[in-house]
Length: 93
Image (cartoon, rainbow, N blue to C red; front, side, top):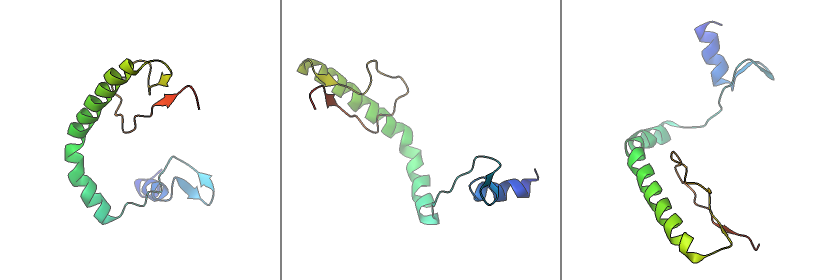
């Protein structure tokens, strides 16, 4: 596939022709302003992930003291987890 054709295909969500997918593509609607903001925020991503991990570890430690019935996000703390959500459930709905 020529580079030009590949780029056009990716732009169209991977479609070569209507409803015929040749490759995986995306249809993201990221405008220039969002891209500019995210480009700046990307510098802080590693720091923010470390903070999230720190908070998650604190939650794990403190919630372990609460007692039974709680279901935490992971039975074992996952090394590369980002914990953008820390969902705690209880066995009783």
